[in-house]
Image (cartoon, rainbow, N blue to C red; front, side):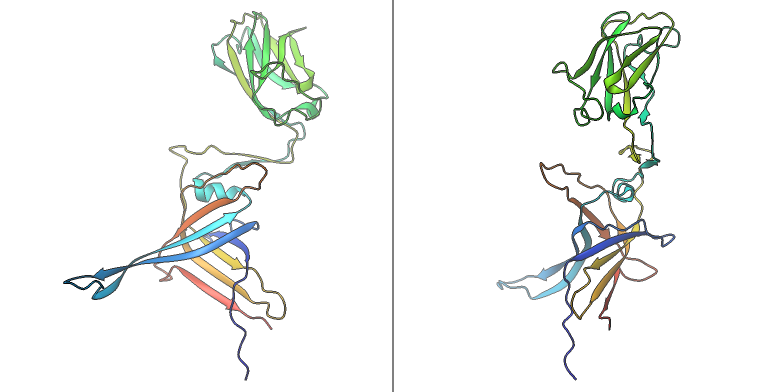
Length: 294
């Protein structure tokens, strides 16, 4: 009888967090760059007398931790590591324009005399550009429009920034109760007699035509809740004739917080950490399975 092939781990295949209540997976983290399971224990030494070496040593606490470096941000990551699940929206074939609201002063958005709404200029959905917009009164019946980022300025008809303070449309006026900015795909509806106070502002947000979108607010005092979860960690399936596979089932994980890096010219790697807690029912912190298929 020959000796069996050594048991080795090469690479990482993926990580699958799952619900401890239902057992259902949240989803698979496929762009797993690095993962590790760490069990760091303390040894408590007994010193005394003139000896420079301990007389005895006993085990102290062991900290078990799962470290992940992933290259993707599925929605469940926000739920497990930041405490809030995003709201997912279906495709928007005409984009989305939020309700305009007064920001500084109260003269721009008014139920009787002012701007009643912002809406899509007919046939111009391709010109909608992602961003947060500011309307600023520059006269009793005219306004400027400001776009807070250049990230999407080339979508559809190019948008030109007119000033360093990111004005994209100046002295916009109403004709027959409508004012339009074609390059932005936007129209503004007038109600009553305009009486803007110069320098008052109002804001709204725009999403371009899209296949999907997500939104989430992190840090709310009521909504935030960090659930415990399980996690399956898989090493890369070995090639050649071995086909060896290894699986770790971490029964009870707890996370709180994560970095979100932005690095020039590089894919973001999200460094995630989870404490492995003792599972009373299973009397352990994880199971390991190793298989050499035939």
